[in-house]
Image (cartoon, rainbow, N blue to C red; front, side, top):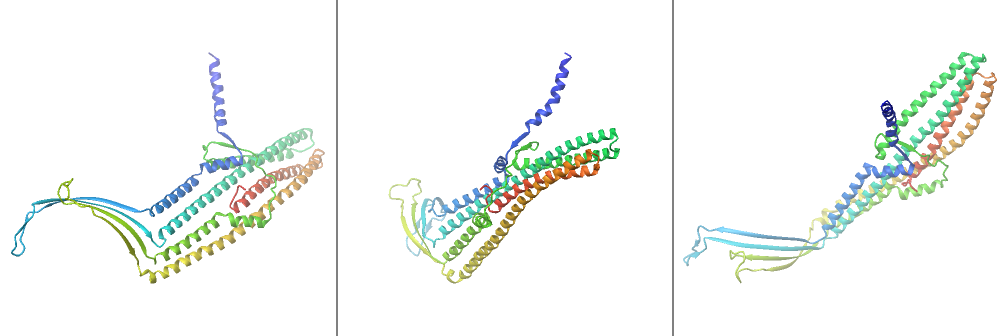
Length: 438
């Protein structure tokens, strides 16, 4: 009986840890991107816009089909004055009431409408393709935001590793300083300096953990995960990528960027609009068939020879001749609008070129930073080793020892951040070409 409370208390202590472990999710960079795309609310909205455009296209296609209508009318008439006398002839006696049934059915088909229906279908189809490119662009944006956030979390994780190493080294130095103080080799001030350094690095560790929680929460939202999920990232491939010449990325961007392809489609839409306006000056030709059912007998099912069912066939030609002179300025307006699209593409193309060049140079800079920082770490390591030896031999001050150690670990943090920045810079370069996954 005595052991039960102990067991329950032990389980109570383990339960928070068990629950926490259940909320840890390990994700690679590609898995995070796929999850972000699958759960993105923006992409779902983009897909809905595509569905809307496809539905609109189907509506326009339906307008090409023949139109048909049918109606059935029942009329009842009361005739109070049913005697009619005209001139001096015999009066005409009408019934006091009468019933009649009239039915019609009609089918009409436009044989030639100046191509307006075909042009409307083509214009709507092109706008549907524009909506699809919007979705592609949104997917690229979502992918990049996930990659950016993932790398931010990676930088924090790497910084925390270096900070932890730094704290271990400081703890060792502090023990050594305390031992030297006890032996009378160093003063109390040296011990305090190491304790102060330990406190400062601990504060840095707390700030890093706080930033990790903020970025982790943002990543949870992006990926559609529960907001208390602790994302455990795997180290992305930060190896230096072999890049192609700048011109190859520029050419790729000019042919792949969604906004440039959209402007090409909008140029085609503008051309279709010009043709559609010109089509308004052309005549319309249609054919139709009408069937009538006329039953004045009063009975729903009339006796023989007391109803008629005439069928008519016809063709109509209509032409709004006024469009020949009042449509000219509409065509000019449409041409100006089309030219605006062409000019806008020229502007966007220049923007794409400058963006790709900037991202290309930034990646080159990030790679060069890595090489310089690797050299600086080697130098800082040698400096730290020398000052450690001098401090042990009491020929260097605690300040010099702390400065050397701080410089070394700061260089290590800078290197990890530079590697992550280079990886992100490479994806930024790919994004500027219009396709992150190449």
